[in-house]
Image (cartoon, rainbow, N blue to C red; front, side, top):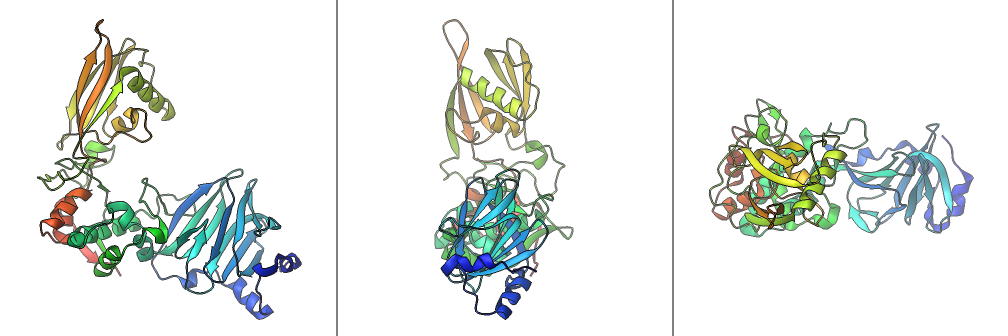
Length: 415
């Protein structure tokens, strides 16, 4: 255990009352302050320096390459920065305190917020290097505190009469979080705070109605045959959800089957939508996607000549699409279509793979424009969030909503 005299020089940052207090700080990992079960969420992946601290005092711990530890009591923020393949710690004046670190953690001394570049989070922070001059920041916290920052970003800020939909979202999001905790086995986190998993914004995403939904469903998850389910959900199904095997290259799941949504999600602005691509832009988007994903693109010529829908799923989404050029035919399947088409002149992917085509040709009969008339937003598997909101407005309870979208599930209280 080492104590560096350099720490004395960081002025107001270090508030060490005694050697006994410092020893106590070194011994503690911070996890003893967290309720169980916990979740580890990557909230930032960056090459930039990050300012971190707490509302009051916090304990900053470091581990160097020799696994030696240091601990500081800090009254103000500190800065963590990538340093080649490792990390370095600075004070706010830019003075380097430590370098060649393989891990840094920040724990609030008392129950309070933690700050990450002026954003508030609960729990504790862990910093890890990730390659050269890159690091990621992990927020470790109780699952219920994590969900407080997930519900509103995922389902929107709802009204009291939509509480049952928020409760359904709470159970789905909790189940998803707990069943996917081994998704990144080579990393020090379970989930990322993006649409790849669940959107999580920390304290700024919290809402009173969501807290009520969490309290009323605390610890509840969905299971089939005693096991947690893959609780996928999406924004708007457009009238039907779909079998998981018809959307992704995954095995069928008894609880992820196509179900009719009647008219419950038709209030969504994405229930129907339109996009229009210049033929050259669409072909370029498809080529870029196939190259970036390592897929064959040798039959993509320079001129898009035709597009044909070859098959659809039970829920109406396209499962096979033929792309014709002067060089041959390329087939796109299932949800890959959304990623390959992307958006015309915009970031992101096509809203849904449930669409019809309108092909326009010029005077020389060359394909010039591709118009898409689509339905829904998202992959279409599992719970339709707008449908859940519509059902809540119609008087359905959250368990009725969940058992409609997830066939044959049992809702159990895990803790």
